[in-house]
Image (cartoon, rainbow, N blue to C red; front, top):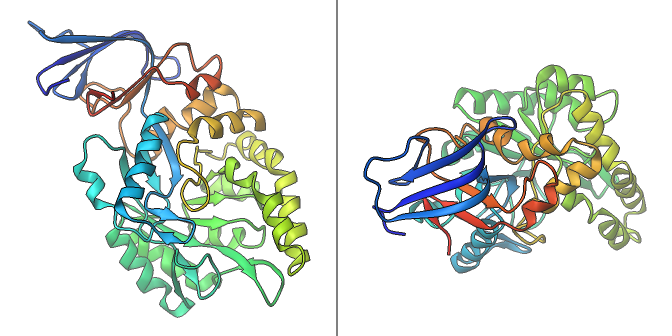
Length: 363
């Protein structure tokens, strides 16, 4: 499709959960609900259209052993695009992926800079590994490098304890989060355990990744502060295997990981029921493949979140949370077309009919 072609999308346009329209037009890469005058070279696509899906926890440019070459990162981004993910919040990457911004055929990325972890308390080659006295400076650095987000590693296994333990003293977290906010960035944190959450939330954090340690006594605090969670249930599914691998050296940690896994659905449903914002993230990159967004939406439904709300967590609601438009007049035409209504069965997301990115149908 050339730059002057017009795309006509007809059928059912899901501009919102209940805002269903009959058609839209794409002119010069942007959405219009008014038929263009004297439209020529029109291509028509039919079906159920959603805004381009959001993966709010994804790692383009990251592999199992750290940063990957550009050609590998490109394949990661293409896998996400093929799955209908057209907006990514990159929740930490040691790779410079700014080159993606110049590619109209790749998903848009909102970067959180590089992970910030405690020394020897995270996966090797992933993060800046520092001590608490340097946390404010590194948060400021990543706030300036990122796209409005900073990513902390809030807890990890402490080998001396033999279990998960918080990474940062309360005072250091408070000062760092305040600095990020001063610079206009939001802060999120990787957290598996229970005992890292209260201090981070009271320190002003905006989001928690995984949040497997969210307990009934902590849920009201999250709800009161409006702290979002991105459960990454397709990643939490790997906990039993991780636990088996660490059993001989860290039996206490292994047992803890199994408990977190066993209650994962109850944790997510409890958060949702309390009004905590829940968003879709796959944790692709590292050890998980890209393109798992449909599987993660299905996992949220399995956890007990209503299908339309699980859809919103990767579509309308997720885009609003990240400050990006959906299927609005004048917005960039990033959308996915399906054969059936995904509100009726979210499994439809696994089989897009057409992906439209920047107004162009992906062939």
